[in-house]
Length: 140
Ligand SMILES: Nc1ncnc2c1ncn2[C@@H]1O[C@H](COP(=O)(O)OP(=O)(O)OP(=O)(O)O)[C@@H](O)[C@H]1O
Ligand SMILES: [Mg+2]
Image (cartoon, rainbow, N blue to C red):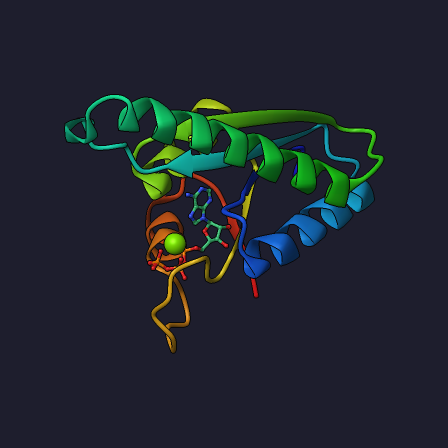
């Protein structure tokens, strides 16, 4: 039923919960593919060099570490794992990726790294739920 899964991670506790659910779902449903996406807001070019390059490198390292931790959390799994690190508006990236990869289900946390306490849904999950081309599983 859910053959192609799209998991969005930002390093938050909620995204970790989403990762565990995604792995469980993929195993139980015998999913074919699990795509993990990390998105970054664009780095403002006015930072100038060498700050710009430093920011790019730091991000790259952060993304690699986050993807490695996420894959470790998923563990041994028979479905194909694909990773994407992209720059731009995170919600838009998740929606576009789900569209282009023809995902059957998006899995994400209800909240992320944002500091506004009291919100039920963060802005990224809210936007994805509103505009996604497929069902969305929001994990607390
Ligand atoms: N940059 C990102 N890349 C990939 N997934 C993300 C990203 N940001 C958020 N997500 C996904 O969306 C979920 C909800 O995060 P969201 O950013 O909406 O909440 P928040 O950080 O608490 O609020 P806000 O960002 O509006 O301050 C996360 O658990 C994660 O699954
Ligand atoms: Mg956020």
